[in-house]
Amino acid sequence: MPLKNHLKEMRARLGVNQAEMGQLVGTSRQTISQIERGDYSPSVTLALKIAQVCGVKVEDVFEYEEDGTNE
Amino acid sequence: MNKKVKWAIRIAACVLLGAVCGFTAAKLADGGDLSEIFDDIDGKKVGIVLMILHIVIAAGMLTVAYVLYSKASKAAKNLDPDDDEAFDRIEAMTNTPLMAANLTLVLGTGLFGCAEYFLLDSGKWLAVISPAVFVVSIILASVLNARIVEFEKKLNPEKKGSVWESNFQKQWLDSCDEAQKQMIYKAGYEAFRVSNSLCSVLTVLVLLAQFVFKLGVMPLVVVTLVWLTMNLTYMRAAVKLEHGGNKDA
Picture 1 (cartoon, rainbow over the protein chains, first blue to last red):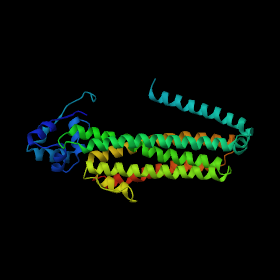
Picture 2 (picture 1 turned 90 degrees about the horizontal axis):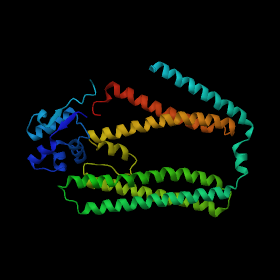
Picture 3 (picture 1 turned 90 degrees about the vertical axis):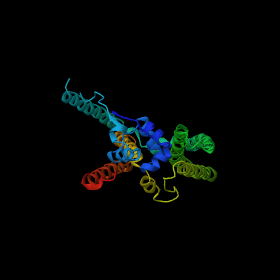
Picture 4 (picture 1 turned 45 degrees about the vertical axis):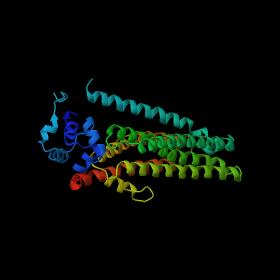
């Protein structure tokens, strides 16, 4: 997945664990864990919710990186 | 070699294989029927071997499953709520017991059916022990399944559903978020893809076996029914999703 994220750093800044972060954005702890590990790329809705809870723009949490497979 | 040529070669190979199998089946068609072949073997011995295999598989799988589940349950008691990696580790520990419980149910049902076929006329004790093994293993596997689900619910309080209720799968799915639903859908599609290939192979085998062993049309009807149900369900769901049912997927 060419989507890099800084969710772990943002979460640390908020001082919440994965379960609490999940509650804040209305998702499970497992999903937060998967996003942080890069195993899951969230939907636009969830990405926007995460950015909103972190008080930043969505591009500050998620970065799209070309992986070269489409070239 | 371009794709069309490769495809043509593959089709030609399939036709050739079909012809060879058909010819062989026709040649073997005089081989006699399967029940006659079974008459020549000691049904009681085969039944006992199948029953012992059932006991060994059920006992082995359930023991491993209970040990791993107990380990996960013990580890969860001392879990630090801020230790995110420990959460992931404990959840991963429940995968094997869950798989073992499900395999016990499926394999147990198959082995029980086969053992009973041979044991039914082999004295009342043997015909009673086999169903007893089946019932006990089904109960133990179901209880384990329920305990793992309750354990998962403790780790993830947003999860809903009880395995003892008929609509458990729907309740569980409804309580899953987008990532978990995607995981379930992908795993479901993989199961569909593999089952589809398996059904096509089984159809050919059953078709040939029908002539060679005079099995009758029942096996072919069953495989066709499963294959048809799978495809109709898939296509019906796909059409429904295409026309507005995909909003909250």
